[in-house]
Length: 371
Image 1 (tube, rainbow, N blue to C red):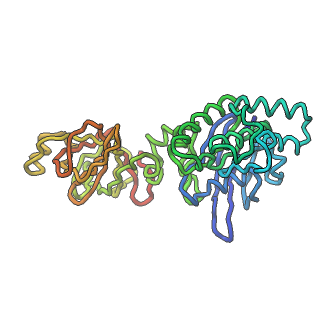
Image 2 (cartoon, helix red, strand yellow):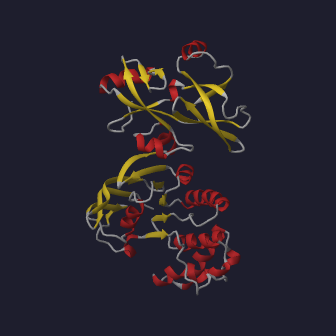
Image 3 (cartoon, one colour):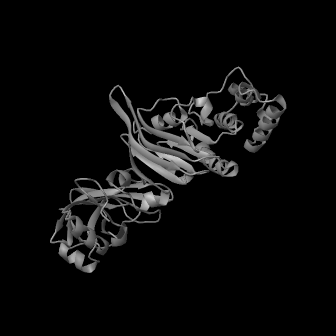
């Protein structure tokens, strides 16, 4: 198997930059997901690694080899596409055997490798069928099998689950993760689906407009986003981002409410001299208390902790196991995620609390996290 390293990768089309200065190091046997919205450069990056696109600048290393000038065939990679790309006139066996036949592998070894891979993917009973006779999940397994039999050093996967229905996608996510660990092959996987990325990856490379925004483990990206874009892209429902001004060095003033600056930001705010920030709080982290919040704002805040704010439920969005609350604070709307048993309808007065340890702050000018 092999590591993959990209150094200063740059690719443009007709003067438009698709990938800019990308540095990425994928460890041997690691499962890395390239994540981002459409047009962010993730598929272009994958195609450059595969040799399907020539790079304009930078280096691509697979194992100990610089592969920029190597053909796709000589890079010893296998790619699984969104469309599966199976030959409709061939049986499952023939589809899986085809790359080995092209590589002039001995017939006995082809039979052994195809059968072994079919057992691994639990498709032994499908070897005589044509692709048209298979379900979407079965076709996906065949496409994976055709890649696995080649015994490549690197797997490249371009949104391989996007054509499956929601229930099958969940099943195949678990299967792919188990399979990758079982065979121990370095894997780079492209998706725009943050759930796929967070559940499958050892590390996530989040991209925007061709530029790498953060490269970390899923938990780190969620808990410690490096900038406003990362915070807004990761998490469902999305994070609440509230413009605030720093008042007297100790208060975050959002206009509709004010809360104290959490202790962990006192030093960083002083060092950066940043006075215009974005306050980030995930809906899961907002604490919502139903009950009497009558009286003036000052009277309400005297009855609750200093990081609490009066609010009104604007709408509710039941999810079954939880409920999303749209909360009105003056003219502002915030989202909170509460348990399914939470009692409160539109118009109910509540108090919301911003746990200081769960607050994120970002520089409103640069978007960078303050830490």
